[in-house]
Image (cartoon, rainbow, N blue to C red; front, side, top):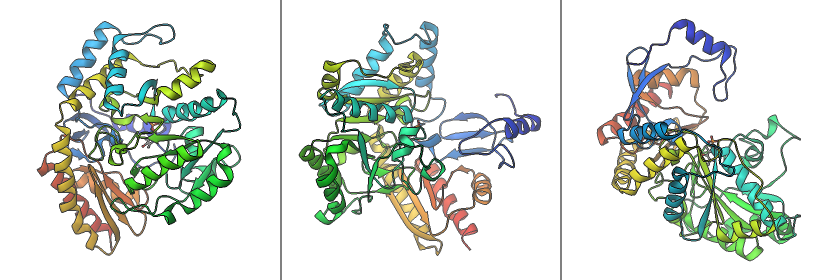
Length: 429
Ligand SMILES: *Cc1c(COP(=O)(O)O)cnc(C)c1O
């Protein structure tokens, strides 16, 4: 339907366009997409592949969703963008209302950001301004657990895992923050005092420097696809209260149903002071994220002065319209049985991989399935094999993982899982 991509255009791409974490010389071939429908990506050569990645967590309702398309077309015909300084509009008000209503009750205020990384930067600034407003500017450091991923901008990079992240590329440039070990208690395990020893020791000595503790609740995403105990989140909330530190949850990957709860913090019944959402917020249609906070945080900052952030495309009406349509679809609740089905099928169909010599662990939570290998994959080898199988799976390092669109059928999901097992057999000598 849409236009084909020529070899000449592909070679222009290879020489002139940066892709995520890519070079512009000797680059691996990209797979050209000409369309997308439901859970399928349509490739230039006429093949269609099942998207196991939801385009990096966001495309939860599937591609070309009629209701999403309609909402955006309607908003385009009204207005596509206005500045948000001094002006406001219904798409933003509607979306903020929905976000306040669906998040835990203490969360009352919405800052619209243009990407997940920006939402994290905003969260860090918010935590710092909260303490500046109380005349405690020395509380300007963040603490996090190892194995995290919070985005690619400077603030986000500085709290990503210090070994797996980008610290070694930018030594001396990144702001210095603090790390404790990643939660050692698995999803079904209780959190023991011993899991918190280093954190407690740190807090006893250094909590006066800390503005906040930031963490991805329950699932550490791109930093290693780890799942940990809800109990850990409960203890973290208690420690933040005890030591007078803000708690920030990054729900950019986990939010809007992905872990089987609407927000991952609901596994622990814990409410953060600041919460970042993004990715699935617009059903994958537009780039948008948000930093939400309690009234306590927003009032404390505001009594001292303005909150100092304001992007050009803040609360872009098209993105808000996509967000409103996506949250409307979610509010009908079909995501719950969909996620339950996805979890069951992922467990049944990925588990056989655990028997392979090349596999160290298979784990599943909600709509997330992870096959952890003993050795990193060779991307140039494995990526074409997945496409040959009719699936789009993009591993990183030792992790072959999927988080399919919620609308995937059991049969499509079985195809996806079986393809993973077959490909791992082929490469797993
Ligand atoms: C993807 C992600 C981000 C960054 O979001 P971008 O939109 O890519 O900037 C931050 N935190 C988490 C947990 C993420 O998964």
